[in-house]
Image 1 (cartoon, rainbow, N blue to C red):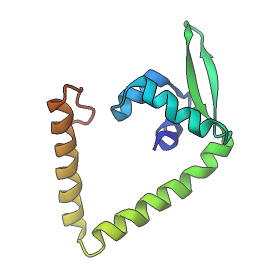
Image 2: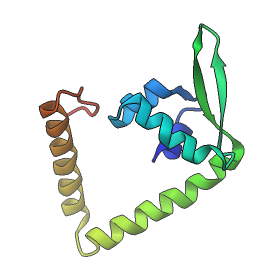
Image 3: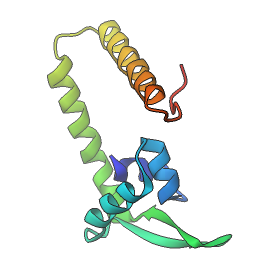
Image 4: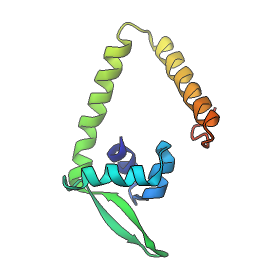
Length: 115
């Protein structure tokens, strides 16, 4: 998920931005990135305006993994919702997104998705 999110931003993002995007604390994002770093799927670049921060930018090798990640998610969704119609899938997705937003609100996190 981290790699997929990072790949959506060509200019990359800081660890804080990434953590906020997925609703975790920056130290948790840092630990997760450390586990992925040996694969060469991203690089760290200094932020010109703030020497304390770095941007995480997906490499070409990382971008090559994205289609496989998306296929795996599609296969999982098909297994989970195999017999559902397109309308039922849309209702399920909308309901899950709203539940996720509500739970984040209950624990004091900003809602990341719009209703």
